[in-house]
Structures are given as structure tokens and as C-alpha cells.
Amino acid sequence: MSETAPIATNTAPVASSAAKGDAGPDARWPRGPDGEWLVAGRPLSRVVDELGATPCYLYDRARLAERARRLRSAFPPGVLLHYAIKANPMPALVGFMAGHVDGFDVASAGELRIALDAGMDREHVSFAGPGKQEAELQRAQAAGIVVNLESFREIDILARASERNGTPARVAVRVNLPFELKSSGMKMSGGARQFGVDDDQVPALLQRIAAAGLAFEGFHCFAGSQNLRADAIVEAQQRSYALVREWLDQFPAPLRWLNLGGGFGIPYSARDQSLDTGPVIESLHALAARAAVDFGPQARLVVELGRYLVGEAGIYVCRVVDRKRSRGKVFLVTDGGMHQHLAASGNFGQVMRRNYPIAINGGGGEREKATVVGPLCTPLDLLGDDVELDRAAPGDLVVVFQSGAYGRSASPRQFLGHPDVVEALV
Ligand SMILES: Cc1ncc(COP(=O)(O)O)c(C=O)c1O
Image: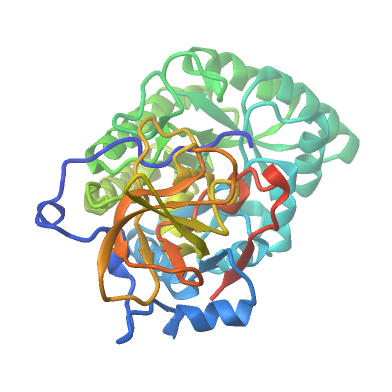
């Protein structure tokens, strides 16, 4: 994986509703009268029976569509919404997203294949990531997508590929910004980074692009991810814009895209307050108006999001295999675990482990504190640590919410040779 993103290592100020005992993100999924969680309007046990297997990831089409629709309808006309496939590359999900966003960002030739299979217009596919291999760059050039350049070496390879194919590669410059995205779960700019090129090298890179005859199209500024603070995102976007504006006289061609990154986070616990996108949208309206003047009517701003678009639309479901007591503690041992949901186990870059929202399907009776684990021979295999749940027995289903991003594809599924996890769009 090129650039992994951690889950919720930052904590925004506690929402007053959360402080008053908001049950957290899981409260947003409906429950039927018998306590069953409803997935796309159907009882979870029924959906799982249809699939014929646990563990599974379920992604709700209506939630996916609604999240993208809300953002796009609030964006000004000059701002495009891209989906970063790395958050969830399930081909059926990516195919579904193709109809709900303006473009895709891919991080490898493998993701490029998925993006094109999904039917996304290649005009709106971009490729970012350090260490792009020669064959990947050649494929990107042949496909006619935008390559976000992260080194001078990539220019040379693309120049050769362009000469061979008789069409100039489409390129943008990924900038290692001179600042960080404050309060981010993961910072990806500022200081020394493997991502992009340092801002002070950009003028030389622009000259090389022109000399190599590549088709310059814009800039990519990705400062960080999993951010719940609108003010930090607004600041990073505005500073990115101002920086790029300084190079205006040096653009080898009119600017077509200015990708301002993303970083929109989602809450993973009741302590997290959901991102208020209002100030970000307001700022985007102002930036889009300025961009039309500064860069011309052809210029588009791009917001590139992964987890915000898909994370809350997915759940991970596993089944209790055993129920044990150890020195006064209840353990629910399930058929799922960190090999399929590394992030929920707290081992995907988190600084501090916190439970994802987790619940038992059905129930509604006695409550108890239990620790939910998987079948692996490591204490790291933890899905819920000492969490209050409905009392569960073998056969019951366990639901981990907020699991639509960085789930199956971000987990070491070969570890210990258990069967793979099923995924379905519902
Ligand atoms: C270049 C780039 N774009 C998009 C993303 C997606 O981030 P998120 O899923 O937090 O929105 C990442 C995450 O690492 C990234 O590196």
C-alpha cells in the first residue's frame, strides 16, 4: 500500500451531544423492533443468510449515494469531487461510485485498472503516489490519465513513453507543501516527505515539464487525512491555493486542475465530533470565484476524498464462536478479527487504540461488559476492548460500524490462513 491512512488519532472537541451520552456513530443505523440492525431496510441476519457467510463487509448503496450527493450539491460549479479508491477498492463499490463523483484518484496501476473498468472517464482519473514504477507510468501515459508527478525521474520516464506513443503525457505537480494539515490523523506534507516535490523545487520541475514537452495540467496538494476540524481544512486549502497562485507566471500551460486535497474525517467514537463541512464549502465558494479570475474559466478545483465518502456507509459483521471467562472478564471470540479489519483492531497507524463503535445484533435484554476478539494467536487481535454490549452467545452476530474505508484491502488477510472475508453492496 503506498500511503496508508490511520484512523482517528485526533480528537476534536467533544460534542455536547456526545458528552450527554450520544451512543456514537452506531446510533445512526436503524434497528428493527426485535433489536436487529437494519441494513438497507432489511434485518441483518437475513442479509447475512443471503450472503451465506460471515465475516463480511456490507456497504449500503443509499448511504454512499447520499454522502456524495450532499457534498456535490453544496459545491460551487467549479469544484469537482474525486473519490480516492485506496479507501475502498472493491470493484462493485468503485463502479457504483463512478456514477456519484466527478473523478477518481488511483495509487497504483492495479487501482487504475479498477477505475477504468468502473467506467470513469479517463479525463478525470489521476494517479498519485511515490515510487511509481516505470511500467505503471507507461500504463498511465497510455491510458491518458493525469499523473501527479512526485519526482524529476517520473518526467524522464513519461517523456520517453510520450515519444513512443506520439501523445504527451498529462501531468500535474504534487507539491510537498511547506506546512502541515493541523489536527490531522495523518500528516502528509510539511517537513521532509516522500510525497510530492518540495515547494522550492517546483519552479525547476515546471521548467523540466515544459522542456520535456509534457502536457502540464495542474497541481495536487494533499496535506493530510482524517481531520474533523473544518478550520484546519480551510486553512490548508487556502494556503495551498495561495502557494500555487505564486507560480502563475511559470505555468507551462493554462491550469486545468488545482487539487486541494481532502482530509475530511469521520467520527470513530462518541468522543469524536463529526466534521462540519459548512465552513469548508463556504471557503470553496470563495476559492472557486478567485480561481476563475486568477487561472481562467477552464480551471477547476478538485477535492479528493476517501473515507469521508465511504467509511460511514460500511459495516463489518462477524459471528461469536465462543464465549469465555478469564479472571472475571467476559471474552467473545469471533470468526473475524484484525486479519480482516486491521484498523478496528487499532493496528493501522493509530497512536492510541480506541474501540470502533461495535454492537451485538438483536439482544435488547441484559447488558454486560465484554471484550470482543478474533481467532488469531495474538493479543493484538482485538475488535472491542471492555465494551458495554448486549449479552451475547455463540452464533450471535457482532457489528463493527464505520467500517467502509480501510477495511478489507488494508488488512493482512493471509495471516494464519483463515478464510477470506466476503464483501457485498446492499
Ligand atoms: C493522495 C491521497 N489522496 C487521498 C487519500 C485519502 O484519504 P482519506 O481516505 O482520509 O480521505 C490519501 C490517504 O492517504 C492520499 O494519500
